[in-house]
Image (cartoon, helix red, strand yellow):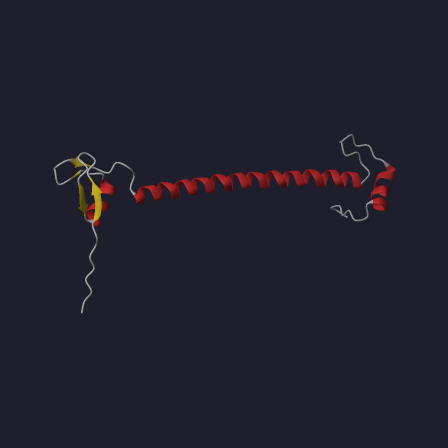
Length: 128
C-alpha cells in the first residue's frame, strides 16, 4: 500500500468579521511571502503584513554577519594595539637593562644594569 500524505490546513480568523476559516499550507506560505490579498468566506480581503519567517531569518543572519565583522574589526584593532604596547614595553626594558634612562634623555647609569642582574635575575630581556 502507498501512504498518502495530507497537509493540514492552517486555521485563520478573519480580522474583520471574526469568522474562523482554513487555508492550505502552501497557500498560506505563498501569501506570507508575497503579501498578496486573500479572502475570508464572507468576502473580506486581508493579507499578511509582517515579514515572512524566511525574510526574518535572512535579516537575522545578516545582522549576525554584520556583528561578527564588526567584532573581528575591533579584535584586529585591539591586537594591533597590544602589539604596539608590547613593542614599547620591550624597548623600555631593553633601555633599562642597558643602564639607559627609560625616558629618552640618553643618560646612562652604571649601577642600573648590575641592579637588574642581581635583584631581578628572573627577568629575561630581549637581546640577552
